[in-house]
Image (cartoon, rainbow, N blue to C red; front, side, top):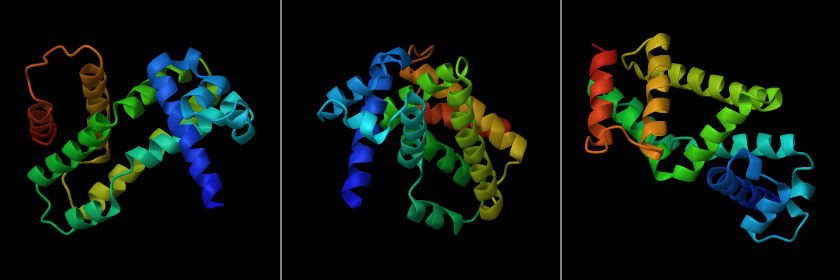
Length: 188
């Protein structure tokens, strides 16, 4: 069983890399097998349809972007301040930045969701759960920020990451400085 889970993760990680490097049109079972170094047909054995493959990529992206529970627990015990909230947002941006293939694959899936309802359903459900999780964490930790403000941070971080991973409009400004400014302005 663990071997099966390991193989699924390996294939999903390969699919994420294919998606990031080749876009949605390049995401095929054959391309995933080639990227994973597995025999042809392996990906289709694990994920029989393209929708099943994409659904697994959404799950794997979620796993890879999930914050360290111990880190969250330690932050939840700290005094809730705007600085702590900025640290939390910076952690999100760091996770997205240190895994550029994951972030680019996520953007590719979002574009694909505009054309394919099945992708929109899988990705939309995951994104809404992520937002609700962030709202719940913020409330539980006593951090500043309403649901609306948390949604605004999601919008801002999405734009920031798209900028940083593609063609930055201001490459000289450090990403941490942008995060600090976002927090200061949205939680005035």
